[in-house]
Image 1 (cartoon, rainbow, N blue to C red):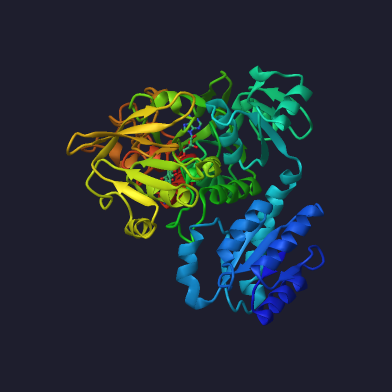
Image 2: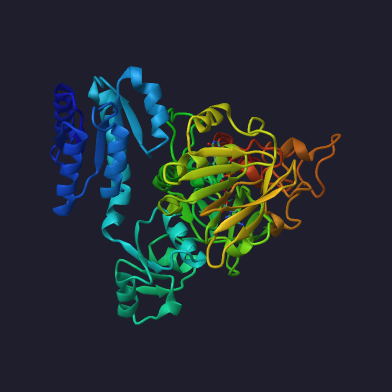
Length: 547
Ligand SMILES: Cc1cc2nc3c(=O)[nH]c(=O)nc-3n(C[C@H](O)[C@H](O)[C@H](O)COP(=O)(O)OP(=O)(O)OC[C@H]3O[C@@H](n4cnc5c(N)ncnc54)[C@H](O)[C@@H]3O)c2cc1C
């Protein structure tokens, strides 16, 4: 554990308190300037040591705590990070936290440490331990920098919080790995597991199985099956398993859903300094596992059927799973941007949602973001640290109708962020990767082609629930109708066979519930999705009691 503070008295006090509780297991290193701290980290790296926790003072003369943590992350990306701030600096620290992915901030003084310091450091240590073991067993990925399949592999590993090392296939180290595996260029992207197995151009399901993510259920009948592993699904898994239901969650890609793509969620209760989607997902997944929920990834649910009292789901490979009750928490997906060239370059400079793995590649490039909602604003704040310029492109005349005031203020204060209103992307150019975009001014009709390294698309979302077919009632946009929405003029939905109305989150079929963004008329927020996941579990209990 390393702590850095330029005030010798504070520095000694932090180190003393840390030693008292963690000294038996961890070495506590104390530095009195950011430079000294970085030098210590380099030495630890050279010696092959590991760093669990970094605590840095926010206000230091030569280099701020934020800058220090940013540089420290290059050396020890898996170390958990906290910022020490004085009360007067809280606001500034919270603003600055947007710049670097800090886990916590601690107010000075932290007396008594049992209440104010140790719970925070305990949480940091626990999070580091959970990821730390995998840190040693590294997965290797050999791929092409600008290829969509290579991006898909990196994105999948990153979103599942599996640490990996990247090797470019056209560089010596990458070529050596391919040769060692007896493979040629056709094998790219190639994934090498920690035990040395090489997978040529693997599917995400093959990667998941190889890196130890669970893909197969332990049993074939559960109390509760949850489809979708975003905030609503994870919320339901935590509550379902903690309340004694045999619970399985099935996710087609990686847990976290849309929220997992967010670089910083600032309005979720209990995280005054914001939390990244990846951290929130990591915590929720561990919490669900702690209570005994099974979480299956890379399994796509393609059908839902009622079989007497059982509710059955089918996977894309034909396998099935049954339960007493089902919660649909499949959220929404981005609508595609239909401008010519976009589809061909998706994954090669064009990305839907935020692609955290692309941050370094944005260095000194011009980044374009399409969309005017909070998600687009957060992405702009994230990429402006790396890119030369970030331009938000919106059709409307301002961001005010679609984006929170606090985000608009933050964007306005950053020099390299621009907003182009009344503008649309009408073409993407590039052969093997995005090189330029043609933008059209909706007012004047004039077109302009601008160089562009990256395009991140954040436009409206749709539920993609076609696979449900007629299993449950949906509205004309595909959202699942529930509870009061299903009862019109006292008439219950067609086929309803109970002498009660559907519960609030219950669909047109008893025992099948919907929670989160996929539900018709839901509030599209992390907190409401988590809340609905929890509430759906209570209604599952009521359903089970009333059968
Ligand atoms: C970049 C970004 C930033 C955001 N920032 C904020 C914010 O700061 N604050 C806030 O309150 N909200 C924010 N939101 C909105 C918030 O993330 C969503 O409202 C929330 O994630 C909805 O949760 P959900 O679980 O209902 O659905 P989702 O998050 O959409 O999750 C659904 C999951 O279901 C899976 N799935 C879908 N179909 C299937 C299937 N057939 N089989 C198996 N799995 C399936 C998907 O892969 C996905 O993982 C943001 C959204 C984005 C995209």
